[in-house]
Length: 465
Image 1 (spheres, rainbow, N blue to C red):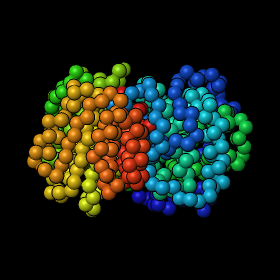
Image 2: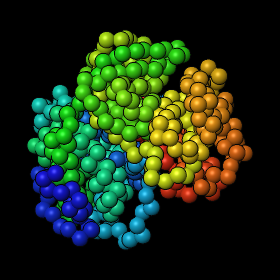
Image 3: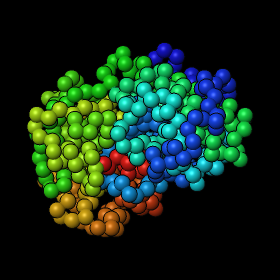
Image 4: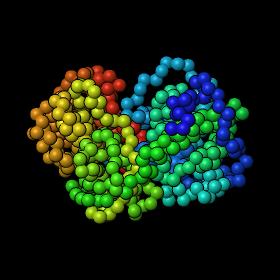
């Protein structure tokens, strides 16, 4: 991997680096109002751990883009989850470094004007480096969110090197599909510092600028090293032909794809998908089956209002069409080295990765207790119940319960009534509200936090289009 990412100790943890980010102060050639319209929506929380995408999520952009799969998320909402990976490790009880304190102060100050900061950043980037604009999607609404979520991750996990480095490696590999190159990083870092210095008028000083420069330099190094290593073993993307398109409901389709070359993944992971109708717009979907001998991949897609990619896949795609796939990402996979039971809660199209993991356990011949709760808003939404019932019939140690409830209350009541679950590994997949309430219910039932696994809530919201 060239310079080992494991050596990239984050500033404040014992290693001092000279910043490689050019200075880009508030005297930028773009007036403050120039980009204010370009990027709405920004999270106003100072502690939210979305991924450390210090240079956004598209070319220089976490499915997203390696941000997260579409499990019936709704764009208008906002997530409040804080997990940067499927299972959020306990944070070490150490005193925050000086760099971490400086960066968090900056994030706290810009939180009320986060939309303006992100808009100004992109205005700077595209005016100073117009050659980078084609790397980004035509519409920048989702892109704006990703920048702020990246900064929030860096702020929260700057002193938790293993968590941040692991995510950055995945992010660096995922960004290859945009055409991101090492020389793009300094341009992005300079404009980022320019935007922060313009709006963090009370907390910005030479010390804060130096801290941001050190952190960004390290983030860049980890990501470029990971991308270089990945380039020796895998393509930046795969072409995949639509083999079958099964419209299960008026707004849910099950697609089977044939990639143009082997595509290794784990059940429970997800991939970013780009359609020919919306170039450079990627959305994330979980694999709906375990790896197959024939190499085919299956996805469940729900068309959401105004969803460019989801509507294209559900209502426009046909057998013979070709899409592009980014690399597999996600850590919500089954640990086959243990024999504990699995408690699986799936809601809507969130049943896709649940089914994949159950299939994988069954194929390995392990008779581990598997309890599946399939939640839906109506009988109409239980579009894949027959597949799960066939799995139960073939493997008596699998239990499947369907729960129809518009508010998820009955689903959690059913889980509570069927416990205890303290010795089970819990997996949740579905709409953000279901995951948040499900985690709370499981914690109240005594399930330890490290045994509760799910994809990042905040990315589910941005991925459902």
